[in-house]
Every structure is written in C-alpha cells, then in structure tokens.
Image 1 (tube, rainbow, N blue to C red):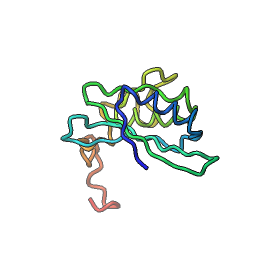
Image 2 (cartoon, helix red, strand yellow):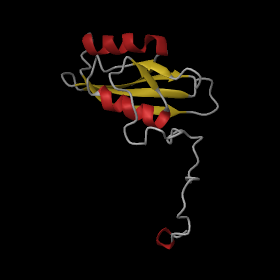
Image 3 (tube, rainbow, N blue to C red):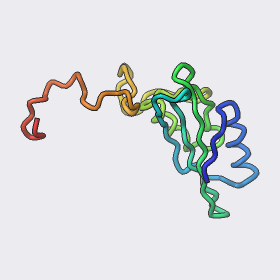
Image 4 (cartoon, rainbow, N blue to C red):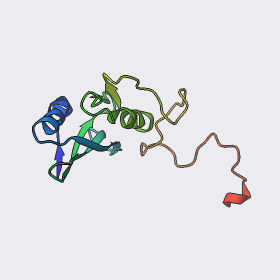
Length: 135
C-alpha cells in the first residue's frame, strides 16, 4: 500500500499510524525528486507493523521553494540519520530535528547530489585523464 499525504498532515498521519495502527517500525525514509512537477521534492516513509506483519509506504511532496517537513524523530528515533541523509542529498529540511546537518558531504558542499538536476560528472574533478577508469 502507498499513501500520499499533504505535508501539512504528514506528522499527524504518521503519529496515527504508529499509535493507532501499530506501525511501530520506521524501516526507511528517503528523499525523492521529480523535476517538472509543481511539488517536485518529497519524502517517502517505509513503515512496518511488526505485530501484524503489514508494510506501507507514505509519501509527501514539497516545493523547491519550501522544502520543509516536520521531523519524525519524536515518533521513531531511527528517523534521525535518515532525515539527515535526505537533507544532505536532497535538501529537505526537517523542522524540529535535533541535529540536522550534512552526514556524508562536506558542510560547505554547494549542492544536493541526489537531485536529478545535479550533473552526473563532477565539474570540479581534476583527474579526468585517469586511464584506470577509462577516461
């Protein structure tokens, strides 16, 4: 099952799924980028009810101009590093996150490399004549 929820309701829906329907485990959370859509960035939450053996995905979308979502760290502590990764690679800002900073890229890295508008070849590389990789 996949549900799409407006960003204004995402925390409320996630809380209801955890508390009322026993989706007690956040398996994963990742960012998404769909260029050309009005709401082109988003997050998908992969939830698991251990007791019932059910799994669902919950998606929400945001605009590039307002790429903010409420944190889910108060619902599932495991969201901490997943949200940091979505911030680092997609530029999603999670309000209320206890330590939202880049997790793998340098703090001063100027872009979000998992967005589809990021160039496949790093323009700052100086080793493009590397024969080991066939360049």
